[in-house]
Length: 195
Image 1 (cartoon, rainbow, N blue to C red):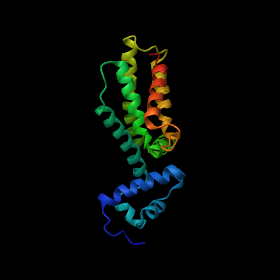
Image 2 (image 1 turned 45 degrees about the vertical axis):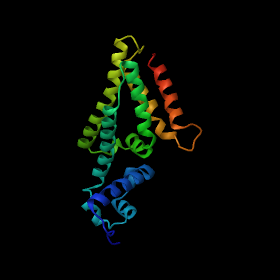
Image 3 (image 1 turned 90 degrees about the vertical axis):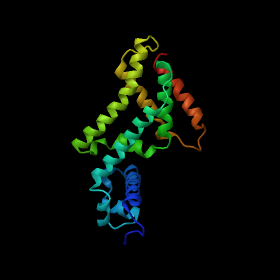
Image 4 (image 1 turned 60 degrees about the vertical axis):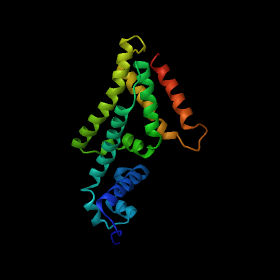
C-alpha cells in the first residue's frame, strides 16, 4: 500500500491518532496492532512510525490530550460568584465536554492499565489535577455551609463517576436533548452535594 498522496505529519498524524482512538475503543488497546492502525489510515505499516514512535505513545497521546483539553476548558469556564455557582459550572462543563467524547472516555476508563508506568504517572497527574478542581469546589462549599458532605473525597469521586456516565449512554437522537440532560445532571449533582 502506497503512502497517501499529500500525506504529511500535519495531516496524517491526526488521522493516525483518530484511527488508533477508534480501534482502541472498538477492540481494546491490546487487541489492536500497528498494522491495523496503518490500514485504517491508508499508509504502509512502516510509514506509521513517521507519525508515532509506537502504540504506547498513541495511547498516551489520546489520554493526555483528553485531560489537557478538559483542564484548559475548565480553566476557561466562568465560575460564578460562589461554591454553588462553581459546582453548577463544573457539572455543566463536564457533561458538555463529554457529550462528543464517548470513545475517549471509554479508553480513559478501560485502558489506563495499559500505560507504561511513566505514562501512567503523567496521565494520573492530569486526572488528579482535574479531580482536585471539583474537590476544591466541594471543600469551599462545605466550609461555607453550602454543601453537606459526610466525606469530601467520596463525594468528589461519586460526582465524577455520575458525570462521566453521560458519555456511555447519551445519543443526539435520544429522548432528551443536550440541554435537558445537562439540566438534569446539574440537579442530581446539586442534590448529591447536599446543597
